[in-house]
Structure formats: structure tokens, C-alpha cells
Amino acid sequence: MGLIVQKFGGTSVKDRNRIFNVARIVANTRNQGNDVVVVVSAQGDTTDDLIAKAAEITGDPSHREMDMLLATGEQISIALLAMALQEIGVPSISLTGWQAGFSTDRAYTKARIKRLNTERVESELARNRVVVVAGFQGLNRSEDITTLGRGGSDTSAVALAAALHADRCQIFTDVEGVFTADPRKIPKATKLKEITFDEMLELASLGAQVLNNRSVELAKKYGVELEVLSSINPVPGTVVKEETQVEGMLIKGVAKDEDVAVISILEVPDVPGMSFKVFSLLAQKNINVDIILQSSGRDNCKDVIFTCPKGEAETAMSVLGANKSRFGGGEITINRDVAKVSVVGAGMQSHPGTASTMFEALYSQNINIHMISTSEIKISVIIDKADADKAVAAIHDAFIQ
Ligand code: ASP
Ligand code: MG
Image 1: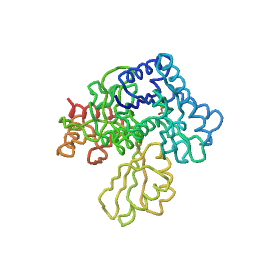
Image 2 (image 1 turned 135 degrees about the horizontal axis):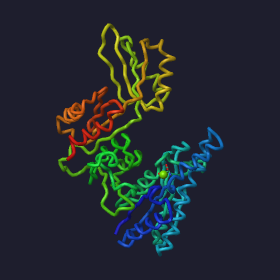
Image 3 (image 1 turned 90 degrees about the vertical axis):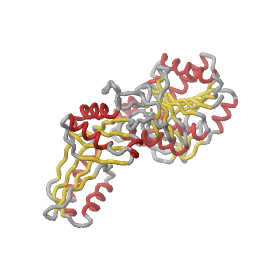
Image 4 (image 1 turned 120 degrees about the vertical axis):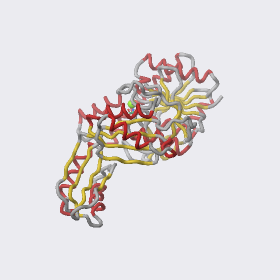
């Protein structure tokens, strides 16, 4: 007997059959004696379709109106799921984000949750109802509708679980959990039983799209244990928590990110303040710089090389080009045919030799490394995009049996 928050993504509620499938999962959880709060996303591709509709009207929609539009997707799902639950005999009620007490800041289309007043949800639970809440949406101080950014329903679910002191927060999706690599590409990839919040955050930001990043941050902050599992296959998923059992697993995952460009500024004068000048220009343009490399000086010059997302590379090139006189330097080049391949695992903190195993795997495939960066629980390399899949397979083989 406990309180469980269950979140179902768009694929899990995409049509009538899937909605009834979700209703049965919820009913089972309730029949085991639990109170259940359900958070749902918009059905299937609804959010994308709504964005496309707005684009038919204008190339530059008002963000406020965008949120007014996008929030409708989740409202369809909550009403249909509440009806399905009632149809199979489970008392239930649907609530929009604001009815469920979500107050956010003013940032339309990427709002952050400020407060969560759970009074209404609790009173509905006390009336023995399953409460079905629209994810991804809230209300700002002007009582205007806001949305939390793409994939924001995960965050809604974790926030509810934290505020209600739920015993568990289950994120149901169309994969069975978190894998050691993309199982569509690496057939040997295995499902993880457990992963830490920190490892999950690294993997999430490296493009393993199972959980929204912010939801993991929030779960870590409030100690909400998450479980990622399939809404189709009733098998145990992956538990995300603060600390995991030491099971001798050095590496939890190998991830590939192709959304990377490498920009090189050659022959920058080797004097104090040059890096500051370069990177403050990029900061002013909100460029997300990731890996930075600076060559050792020669002939009073050095090369400054960095990576950023492909979508920001054009802006980076133009701001650097336009301000070249400020930092001097020669040619500025860009390479978009690269990928970042990373290994993630808290175990590497206490295991020397992780980097050398990774580099050996790359060497065995004759893959050249352009850049390397490390953190406590992650090693990333920048390599040619053409080599990326081969690299992931070789590294996965080297670490995970
Ligand atoms: N429906 C929203 C989206 O597609 C929110 C979510 O799915 O979590 O981004
Ligand atoms: Mg969605």
C-alpha cells in the first residue's frame, strides 16, 4: 500500500488500444492497494503536429500563443484516459496542469516549475480516485498557460512524486529501460538494472533519449527514485537512484552524439586574455561550448579549438569572423563531419585504465581521435562521423560482456 506516480509517454497513449492498455496497468497498480497519480503526454506525434500547424500560420509565433496551442495535446490524453479508466470500472478524474497546482515562471515554451500545490490532487485521492494529470503544462503568475519544454511531462511526473512524497515514480515508455548502448544499433547492448542519477544525467545529455534531463536533475535533488519501464512489455525496467549496488560494472553506457561541430581558430597570438576574448564573444551569443582544446604555443601563436552543437556553429563562425581583429589569429575552420563518442560510469573513478581501454578499442579499429575530454564519470572523444558506429561497437565490446 503506497502512493505511486506513473507517467506514460506519447507512444504509450497513441490510440484507443494503447489507452486501454495504460488503463489496465493503472488498474493493476491500484488493485494492489496503491493510490495512483498518472501523468500523460500528448498522443503520438500530436505535439509535432501542433507545431506544424502553427508554422502554417506564421514563421514566428508568439510564445504565449504557442503554449496555449501545445497544452491542448495533453488535455486530449487526460480526458481519454480518465474515460477509459471509468469504462473499466476505475473511479478517476482528469486534471489540467493548473488544476493539479503547477505554477511556473514566465518563460513561455520553456517554463520552470516554481510551486506545486497538491491540495486538489490529494483531495481527489482521498475520494478514492485515480488522478490523471496533464504533463508538460502549468500556469504563470499572470494566469497564462505555460509549457515546460519538449519532453517536459517527465518533469511534471517527478515534481508530483516529490511533492506528494510518492513511494515510486515510474516512467513508462516504448523501450524497456536504459541500455548500455542504442539497442537498435548494438545488438549486444544490455538493459541496466540500475543506474545512478549522475550517470543518467551524463547519458541523457549525450543523447540517450529515455528521460528528460531536467526530470533527472529534479529527481536527484528531491531523492525521487525513478523507474524506466515499458508500457508494452511487463518486465522489470531500469531503476535510477542516488547510489547503485556495486556490481562490478565499470561502464554503464556508450553513447554517440552526432550533433557536434568542431571549430578551429588557428594561430591566435599566445598572450594572456586571448581565450577570454574568444569565449566571451561566444558566450554573448549563447553558444553552448563543450570541449575546448588549446595547442601549446609555437612561434608566439597557438590554436584554439572547440566544439558546439551543429545548430549553433553558423552563429559561432560569424561572430568570430566579424570580431577577428579583437583576438587576432589566422584562419577559422569548421568541421561538421564529426561525432562525439562517450563512455559513462561512476566505476571509472576508482579504476585506472578506463581511458586506455577505450583508446585501445579505437586503435584496434584504426580510428583516429581528434579531441578528448574527461570528467569524473565520463570520457568523450571526438572522431570522424564516418567512424562513429564502428567506434561505439568496439568500445562496447571492450567494456561490456
Ligand atoms: N508532449 C510534449 C512533447 O512532445 C511533452 C512530452 O511529451 O513530455 O514534447
Ligand atoms: Mg511527446
